[in-house]
Length: 131
Image 1: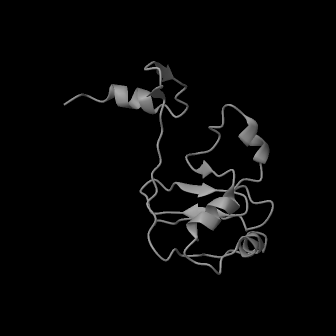
Image 2: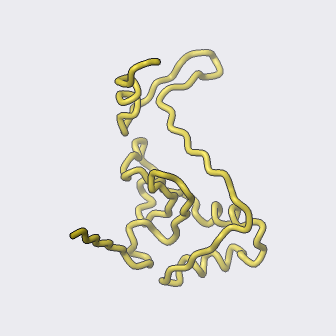
Image 3: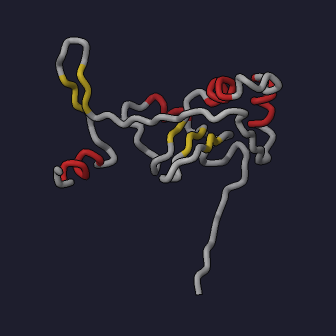
């Protein structure tokens, strides 16, 4: 016998994901979300989630994503975010989402900059056999 249990926190100002969540199709259950802990954006190290991505300016993102739906004004977006009830808004046209994760990059001077790998992805890739 298989049973499943699903727990969800109600929308509202105390929700751990903030006031808005941007869902997009992917195989990893990753989504973008607001946060009630805005102080976290001031930290240098912000890898505090379980894979989802906190959005610093969710109203600006919503306004941009819904730009082809003029009825979604900034005031209406604010009102929907603070209504305390779930509301799904579908996009009229698909919007590609690209998420990058870089732990090394080449700067304008040609030098390579390395940074921390909080999710251990570099180690996992290094362990993979080369073809």
